[in-house]
Image (cartoon, rainbow, N blue to C red):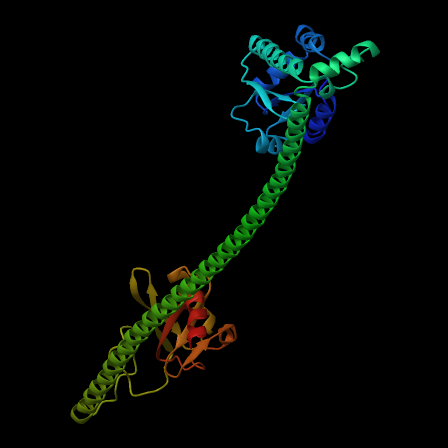
Length: 379
């Protein structure tokens, strides 16, 4: 079975010229519609249409196409799949069927074509195509004319009105299809604009979220630096308190040693002792010291740790560095003297304790490399 290769408007015009029957199979993309379409190609179904009449035009329309919109605007499609039978002579919808199988298709074709043939037989001869109706003989012309004389004018006028009405409906349907297409285009443009606006809003929200994250990170960094400053200030205050206490203890011991030496001289007239105890007790009046007693202060994870190292006065400062490395396990650190303020570097490692002013005693802070870097940035 051959389907008409054209649109609805062209099919209607051909059927109107031939006063034929326009048979339209309306389908969608479902598997059921594909199976029903295949039934039309079967030999017995094709012969049914071919044997009935030659002026039957078969048209296939798929839902969602421009042909479908045009047809639906003139002849409403209430179900899919569906078969519609339209009389080309007057543009009237004669019959429609909703098939579910081969039997429904055969029955629908039979009833639809028979209905059209019945109405076609009732129409005047002049309304039929010349190809489909035999030419009357000269002897029968008068008779035919006489038979049709009573109502031929009325019937012809009705057919003309029907054709004009069909053309008007087709024109309106085409205008409607164009309007529907324009509405779809406007709707697509509107959706595209809304999508672009939403994309920009999402971008703004993302940028605001990124700025909020950066502000939060900056605030956290500020709080951490402030906390480090507070901890360093507390550590510095503890060191100052310890140094002040050490200074007071040292002055007290020196004062007591002088008082004891002065009392011994007045009573025994004997010279003062020249020795020095390892615990930092009585100090001699002589300033020629041979030992360097250094107190190291290191704030470890478990708390403040104090340890003392005793060195020869002429030992190089590098021995003190090695001593601290063994005691703390640190690889990189800074040794800081608070009064006067000074950080000892690798250069001082080759200078003696005496030349650095650490004889007879001194106090040094042990600051790990990371903390030292933070303190330098803060200060």
